[in-house]
Length: 415
Image 1 (cartoon, helix red, strand yellow):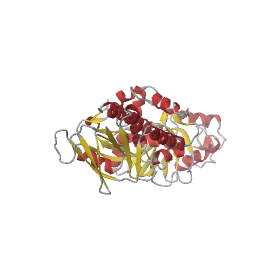
Image 2 (image 1 turned 90 degrees about the vertical axis):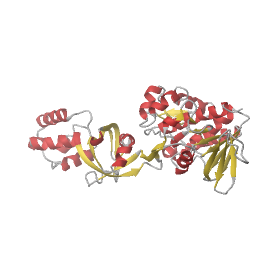
Image 3 (image 1 turned 45 degrees about the vertical axis):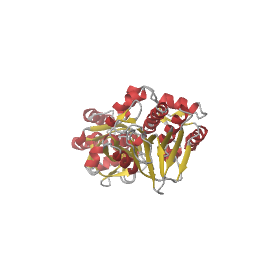
């Protein structure tokens, strides 16, 4: 049995390794157009590689996938983060869990993960061919009687003009248009790909000069889409980033694309308060410290520069004594603290990592085997599918899970 994997990323390697180990007599080849396989693995997590997330309950795990969670529920019952941890640790790569649940190699070096996958592929007998660009694939059904090609096989067309034959084809091309083209040519429908996991460019100078300030907990909301996320946010030179903003971008990916990345955003900088309780806190402050400058009475424990900027935004001089602040001014401050209105004017790139939603329609794939329901012998894994997770190791986990299932099935279905 010959299996070809198109795409030398995390899913491609994991699927090829699993196939080769499940079926030792198989001839498994990875075709990678670039010269540097596992490139995304190497740059992920700021060069540390966020391998997975410390969530070992499939029902909770799927809640981190804006698209694909339902399809992954059963898949995670067969291969989930605990299995990922065991897979790497059994091969000498220990992982550690950080306070937010993200899991990294204890070396804090993504090369540890890339090296493990490269070594394991070599040991399993997987052939890695880099610099080999695929341009298409043709399926020859079992009873096709195609001249020169045995029925039930695939013909892989290379840019060089050469052709390769295989019995099983696994597409792990991520969000590259090539994978979508091949999938479409073999009978599949594609959900239009749009960016997910990105930062927000914000209009105006309201947060200008505050780049680098982070707030440990805030609520960010797309009011028109009725979507919100709570968590850490980071003010940037261009607007807003941090886990809460990135998660909101993932859940709002299609809405924001349709709006051409121009939409209102509201921020509650003090999510433990609503407008009424925030107003009560300020009135109590006014009573308790009437002679103190409002700048020094940061009762919400916000970063000093942000607190002073919010005061200035609602026309309160930071040096004004608390007793001298009018009720109307306090009301403006409450609104700015709990329902500050901003305007998204564009999106930024989250580090060097690029995630998309969209891809092969999930109803056309059997999630027990990751085999196509349209074309026997064709398999999918990773981001080519219409699956995407929020930041935190979830996208890698869906890649490990779907490619493991595909690799298992490809091997078992042979012979």
